[in-house]
Length: 260
Ligand SMILES: [Mg+2]
Image (tube, rainbow, N blue to C red; front, side, top):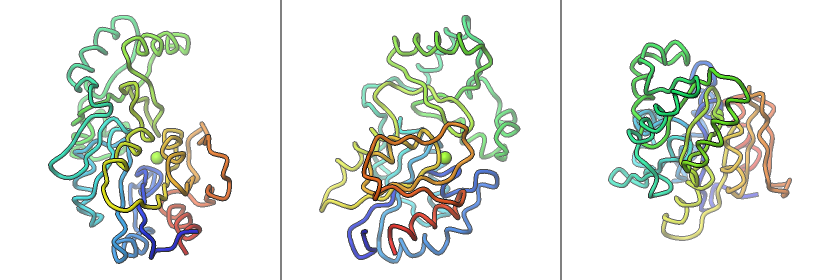
């Protein structure tokens, strides 16, 4: 097991992990956040949230300036001056919405682009101001599917032909560039970080966290509300811990387990 004295990086999902699924609070994790800071251990957010949502949150968490992964791994910010889409040649958000609007003539779905801030607020429980930040997107679209399951599979196939994929988040479906995702983004980010190799600890509660949790050295699977379980490819069971608690309590439980 690693110790706090070793060179570590902690990579974390937000909703349902560091943040409570319902209240978006992280009070239970305060003590651990301080401990990480005292030991200069970077905390890398790896979330489906947008960069616009993550930046103010980083400030509140006391980790502004740290690298982060946004939009489920379709966007990485290395430092405040360098932000890029993953993969680098993927289409920008406006072009993605254009592509999706063509598909709306065949399938019934609604994207964040089509919603108002008030709509998004009603669906998520976010304030309208925060909902506005969630609609400031760079690289992926969030959608609510309103068509049949058969249509969904046809839609998925059409997206694949356009080099796009679908990822399930905590509440919505995310249309992402092929070759992006939390795992790909994290591997790219770790490759960019210079200096000595670091031991990585990852924490997440959703199926979209699987690739990230397969990429880190130690994986904490936080008990979640998703109907789809988190499935990992890795077989090193001693490096995987499933928490008994939800959200920030589970987040602390996982760090307690691997980093005592
Ligand atoms: Mg989550």
